[in-house]
Image (tube, rainbow, N blue to C red; front, side, top):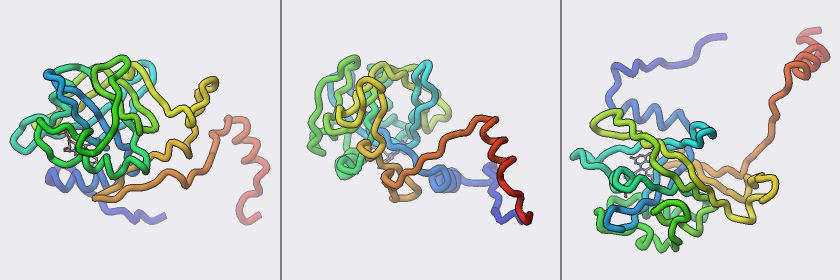
Length: 221
Ligand SMILES: Cc1cc2nc3c(=O)[nH]c(=O)nc-3n(C[C@H](O)[C@H](O)[C@H](O)COP(=O)(O)O)c2cc1C
């Protein structure tokens, strides 16, 4: 097979070029709509797609938060450093417009939740508020801040509690209905993708795999 790829040496790329390649290839990325509260009690919300869950024991997730061009941390990063609490909301299709409002570069005095008309309730185990319309919310406590560069932090949080919309989860089996979650993923640029086009593949045991291999006629026979 011929190699039909173009190689890019990251040592020779600018920051912007690396960003373009990473967000264009690592797709789709889940979107965390993160709520926090400042030391003075000011609520805040912002979306982040440098985000994923890392492991379940302990239950850790990570968010890559870039600072403002002048080096000031974004409200989300500052509030997490101040209070240690944050809540990650999964963004579904009905939340998209409001999520976009939360991404607008408002000053720290603005409560994006109010701007976007998102109803909240106080956190159960954390100080950060919970958005009622989100299909799922993960209440987190700060585990570690990785100061990977002067321009950005990676925030690692431990999930201490989860809310899942009751119609989308079976309380007994904890099965989450993937269609009802209706989660949206972020692609490169300003593109997004839906998650309704689903299919199932189960990983086979070694024995099943070998058995199937043995019973499949080889090409050309
Ligand atoms: C879908 C989406 C994903 C985003 N992902 C990130 C991200 O991973 N890291 C980041 O620093 N900013 C990201 N942003 C930009 C922030 O949401 C934006 O800077 C926002 O104003 C931050 O809010 P805050 O200042 O209240 O914390 C994203 C924006 C959108 C719309």
